[in-house]
Length: 565
Figure 1 (cartoon, helix red, strand yellow):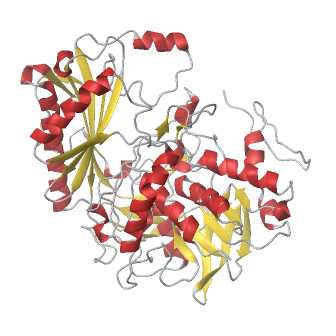
Figure 2 (cartoon, rainbow, N blue to C red):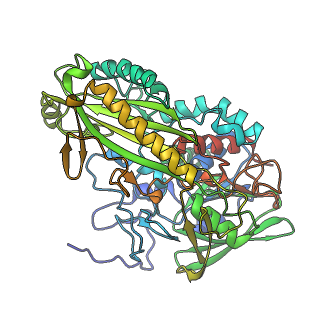
Figure 3 (tube, rainbow, N blue to C red):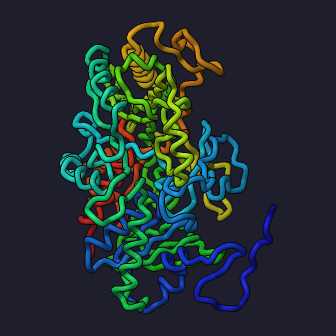
């Protein structure tokens, strides 16, 4: 049943109370606007706009790596939970289904849709940690071919820094989370399939951002990665180091602070305009202060277009092409797989004539889906034993999730009906009076060819694993079918919408030439001395790789190279 809405009073308390909770997490991790900006301390060296996957990581890395940095992190959302929701069992925090029409209220507590578009979107998680509280955890690298159009210095740094971020996220070591007889049987079978199927190029251990075991004796494992635990840890370290003095602190997190505009003049951002719980605030930036846009590709692009537009901004929009194929193969097709329920996962790389793709392959010996027990925290030992003791005696379900690259267009002016782009809407403003973004996603002929070749390769791999047409079934049209997926069917159910990936990228892309790119190889806007992009908007290309590993690596790189006095 609904609860009464809490109304603020004039009374002051150290930690606020609700009907059910003592808000220790919020109070110990966050600060009010007045606490952060009115404490008499040194000027800020960096203002980070957005406390999601990349902004939270950047702020924490700046504090840790740069002893003279003083960082202010502003986020439009609040503190929801302190780690990935899958680490918390059946809490009930889910990602809402994509919608084409904004309902005007938050869905699943924190999900809003601040932009408009020509396809359906789930929206954006308005909470500290952002999508890193919900994401799937797959972290493949961009390959050399993907990085060919990136600035050379940036590409070289990514290759060098990937290993560090793979360790920090739990991707490395790759054998502490997925292992066992099913995995041992599936790996050589998939390798043989890759060798036999046209378009498939390699098989790799699943690059999952989960640390299932202790990194060293006596320490807990990190579980599924989110940027938020590191940020909270750095805030608490800062409080302790400063002896409780806000004036001496170097890292502040202010939630419910919606950045409305960045006011620029003289080649610099000089003022940040913020709505803080309904009050307009202006924060002047010192001569040595940088501002970093990390609100997600769409909202960062909107803020840049609204604050200091250039003709190139909003072009080059890319996402990913997604297909989900559910099949099941006869249990004996893979050889001995044990008598307990197990889960396996692998990454298969592929190359079409028109672009790269990969397959995220999961398998299980359970009676349910291939990933029923993947990314789950089951605190009930009796329930876990019941799951593990009930394998399917006949079938092994597999899911092949295909992810293919889209090709961006940086040369065509915005808007254009046949291209993908972001622009400010001339028709609608948000509740703060700022124009909303309009997101236009379209597939090109090359994109459709890549999608087609990926689907054909995925189906061929599944059939190779089965070993024969009578040893595999395909799930579509509401049940298991003996006939393969009809790949020529228009708008098939196994294709996912262009707006459902959370992988929008490219609209503030990096480059060495100001005439052909929006930001420089570090992410600084070419026409401003102190403004940077630090999320997927800065990607020149996306390849097929899920973007989080590359985005986190760019954030870590910026933390070490950002000018700090």
